[in-house]
Length: 77
Image 1 (tube, rainbow, N blue to C red):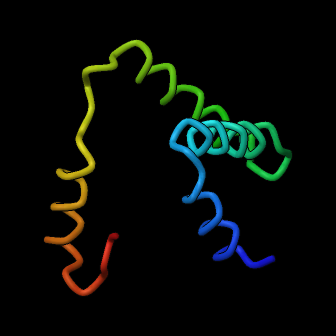
Image 2: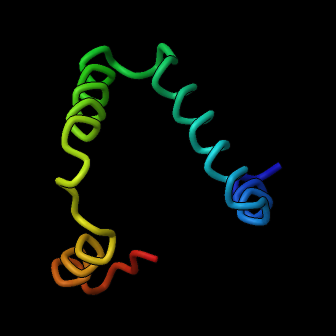
């Protein structure tokens, strides 16, 4: 099964199941031995920083606007 097919099926799931799928996949990625230890630690530190400072965020709209301005030929959606 192609990744495009899997993604299409995942998008058809109810929102709560999509979130759970993302969490499960992310947990598998972080716990795998394929990520270098330094990257795992960086992810953990960034997650903890977010948990400690949940209001210190940038919206997707802001990120997308900056990317669109910097890379106008590259679609981000």
